[in-house]
Image (tube, rainbow, N blue to C red; front, side, top):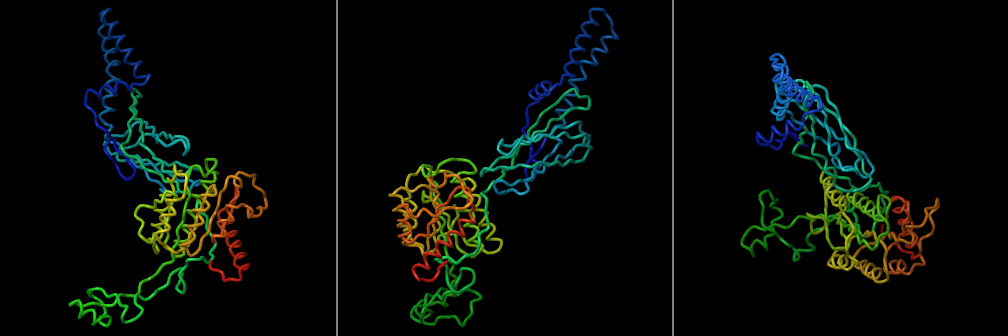
Length: 455
C-alpha cells in the first residue's frame, strides 16, 4: 500500500511469517466464527466418521485464512495521496484537505474505510467509507480543518482499512508520509499613513541616490560585459590597469524594524484572545503592510534573534518576491512562542548597531528599567511607534467607547518623552483601530509642537 501528501510512497514491508500472523489477527467476528465452526465440524467428523462433514469443516476452516492471505498479499496495490488547499491558512480560517485513493491492481477492492490522523486542535478525526473500487479506479474525498491557534500541525499518516469480499478479514495499514498545515497569525489590512524613516521623493518608500557626489568621490568597479562605455572612468582605469566603470545609481529603500516582545513575564493570559496573540497578529499585519509599501522589513524579538535568511537590511521584494517574503515571515510568526528572557537588552544591542528607519514595537508589561531600555531604542530610529499591551489595561473589561490613553503612567510617559508615539492597547481592540489611533496620537503631538508630519 502506498500513500503520501505529494505522491505515492511505499508502505513499510514485513516478513512473510509476521505478515501471516498480522493477517490472521485481522480476522473479523465472521471470520473467527467460520474458523471455529470448521474446526468443530472437523472434530465431529473424525469422531463420528462422517467424511461429508469433514469436507464441510475443511471448507469452513480454510476460507478465513485464505481470505486473510489474499487480502494481505494485495495490500501493496492501493495508493493514496493528500493535498492541502491552502497549505498556509490564517488562524480562525478553514483549510480543506483532499484525499485520493487509487486502486492500481488488476482486481477490484472490497469495502474500504479511510481515516486520517489530525491533531485534536484541528477538529475530530475524519473517517470515510468507500465502496468497491474497480481496477484502476480512484476515489476522492475531502474534509475541513480549522484552528484558532497558530502553529504547524502534522496531518497523517493516512490509514486505510481493507476488507475482503466475504467480510472475513480486516487489515489496517498506514501510509508512510504526512503533510504539515501551517496556521499563521491573523493579518488585518492597515490604512496607508506616512511614516518617519521613509525615504523621500521616489515611489512607495524608495529613492534613487547617486553613488557618487563628484568626480573625486567616484567608487568605480570592474568593467562587465554589456556595460555602457560612456560610464568608463579613465582615471581609475589608468590607476588600476584595467577597465573601470562608474557604479550605477543605487536604489535606497525605506527600512522598518518590527520588534516583538516575547518575554513570558510580560504577558498575562493565554489562548487566542490573549495579549501575546494580539501582539503577534499586530506584528504580522505591520510586516505585510510595510512590504506592500516597498519597505525593507526586519523582524526582531527581545532575544535579539531575527528570521533565518534575512539580509543585512532586512527582507525586500517586489511582486512575487513580496509574497514569498511575507510567507517566510508568517511561517516564523506561526511558531513563535514566549521566551525565557526578562529584559530587552539584547534587542537594544541589535538596534544600537545601526539602522535609522522606522521602528514599530509591540511591548508587554514594562517596568521602569525596561521602559528606560525601550526609551533608548528610539535614538537610532527615524520614527518610533510603540503598542503597549500592559496587563493593567489589557485585562480590563472592554467598553464600547475606548477610554483615553494612559498618559499618567510614568513608564509610558518616559517613552513619549524619548520620542516614541505610544498607544496603550485595550482588550478586544482591532489592529486597524489601534493603527489609526496611533496616527491620531502622532498628529496631535506634531500639531502641538508646530512641526510637520513625518508619517
